[in-house]
Length: 130
Image 1 (cartoon, rainbow, N blue to C red):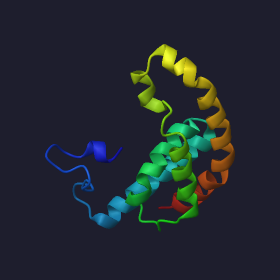
Image 2 (cartoon, rainbow, N blue to C red):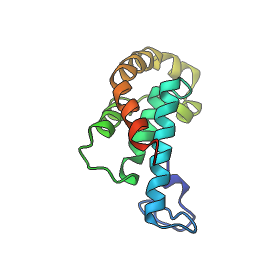
Image 3 (cartoon, one colour):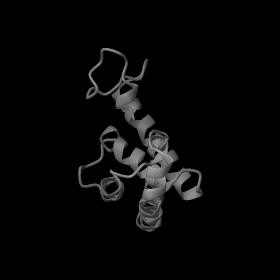
Image 4 (cartoon, rainbow, N blue to C red):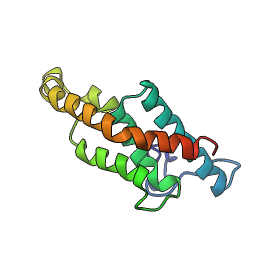
């Protein structure tokens, strides 16, 4: 996440600065990142669960209202899968643990694809020209 990229000594809850640019440029860059992630989900290049987790993590970086319906879709997905090994987190799980969780992961992927399609399209449309 972005907080993981904070320089040493900088508190995790402080937004990282983008060297040589102001806050507006930072927001635009994060909106582009959201658009890229949503486009990759739609193209099948990024798993919907991992993508949802990443998009939900960027919600406060792109300056949208707390109740933004497109972001709430991804926040809801992230909330539902918070106990499942997704993305890089899978490397920390044993094969036995992954095998045990796979039915839930598969069911969650099917559900998340269905509920996130419109949100992905909207985010690409909204932030594609950011």
